Length: 278
Image (cartoon, rainbow, N blue to C red; front, side, top):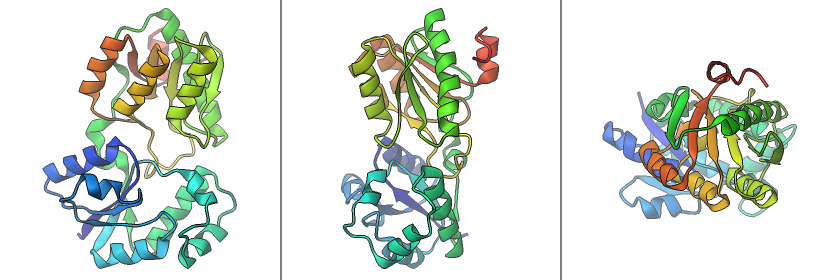
């Protein structure tokens, strides 16, 4: 087996994952597509920095490093697709093959392109399985009936939004959707929901039904919690078995102090809690 490569975007998951892999004896080769931020933070890691549009250069670097498996980590701002700077010929060819710029379309095409180059894309959940919780209360403060009603409602709405390929997150309050994530990302969707509805919102994040399990797995962590505290949210619920939860122990402590409930839910869990399918 060859070497594991990491395509590293923004987010705390990158540092935590590299630390976890290093603890297992892995020495991954990192392609930093953040402009070099990752490699500056982790100077001992082997890797190179590229722009997201330097597809040809990225492929050459992976092959030179002996990479035969790639793990995608962190967020890549999709708005970069609309900027024409530093897009090489290989990237332009790639973009011209896409029927649209939906997340699933882009990610499926990326997987196929890497496979054509003899590089396997490995799943985030498979590599970081200890960060994926099953159903239950994860931490923070207990969730009362009002919170659970909003969680059940939000879970149903988030799944419907995911069916349309729009985003992973909805913000609800008193069984009303106040914000839906689109291209701006989870944090900004939470902020918008908090601005519109005030304190007490509930945030629900799920995997889109058509979403690849290899890339873009829903992820929350301390940064997400900071935004929840900022808008004085009541709860964060993620989809059980489908979401990476980063540094849960620290999240639990901070959520308790802020009065926020943390849950991982699915239909079976909600039915067990008397919420049913809503």
